[in-house]
Amino acid sequence: MKKLIPAYVRVPLIFALVMGGLEFFIDSGDRPAFIKFPMVALFLGVFLFLLVAIEIVVSAVDKVTYHLLTDEQKKQLEEAQSVSFADSKLMKMLTKSKDIDHEADVMLDHDYDGIKELDNVLPPWWVGLFYACIVFAVIYLVRFHIIGDYTQDEEFIAEMEQSDKQIQEYLKTAPDLMNAEKATLLTDATALAEGKTIFTENCVACHKADGGGAIGPNLTDKFWILGGGIKNVFTTISEGGRSGKGMVPWKESLKPTEIQKVASYVLSLQGSNPVDAKPAEGDEWKEETAPTEEVAEVVETVVDSTKTE
Image (tube, rainbow, N blue to C red):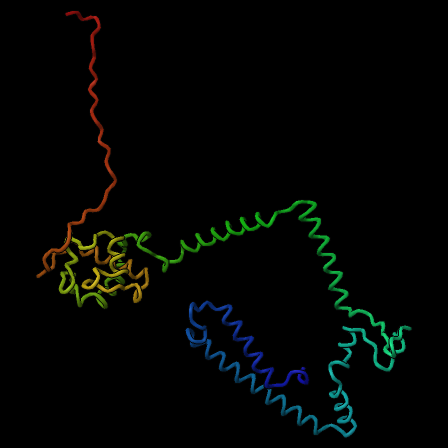
C-alpha cells in the first residue's frame, strides 16, 4: 500500500475523504461545516496534523529498521519491493494470465504471416460479472414481466406520495417556513418578550419604545395604513411599507418566526394609549368575524276552516 500510493497522495486523499464525510453528515445549511462550526475546523486541523505526524514517524521507523537489517535481508527486501503490481500475485489471480515464458501452453496453431494467436482465458472478474448479470436479468424477467410486480409508473406515484407525506411532516416542525398565510397571533409571554426585544432593537427609532409613533405611524390605535391583523402586519414587516416612503422590508434581516413574534408584540400594544401618541393614520381596522345567521321569525297563521263570515 505504501509502495503503490506515496505519502503526498495518501495524506491529501484521506483528509479529503474525512472532510467530505463531515460535510455530508453535518447539516450546515448553505455554508461549509468547517466555517459554520469552529469545532469542525479545529478537528480537521488536528486530524491533518496527526496524519502528517504519523507519516513522519512511520518513515523514520522504516529508515531505522532498514539500517538494522543484514545485507542479505536488505537484498530480499529490495527484491520484494521491486515487484510491480502487474507481476504481483493479486494481478495474476484477477487475470489468470500466463507469463511470457509459458506462452507456448496457450499458443494456437493459427499463423498469419508470422503473427500467432494466444488462447488466453477471460479474466475471472469479468466472467463472474457476466454470470451475475445473467442471474439479475432472469430475476428481473420473472418478477416484472411474468409475475407482474409493480410498474415504473406505480413506483413513481408511490414514491411521490411518500415524498409528499415527508414534506408535510417536515413543514409541521419547520418554524422558519412561516409565512403570512400560516401566521397566527402569539399570546404566550415568552414569544411576546422575544418580540419586544426585536422591536426594541429594530423599530423604536421610527415607532418609539411605546409604539406611539415618530417617523413611523402610531401602532397602538385601531387605524392601519396597510391593514391590521396578524397576517397584514406580518406582510408589512416582511415586505415593507409603501413604496418610496414606507418601512423597508425586514425579510432579509429577520427570520419568519421572528417577524411573527414582533408582529404579535405590536398587536399586543393595541389600546395602550401612550403619552404623546401620533395622530391616527389610515383606516380603522376591524377583525373579520364569521357571519352570523339571522334567524327570521316565522309567524304561522292558523286559519280556522270552520269559521264563516
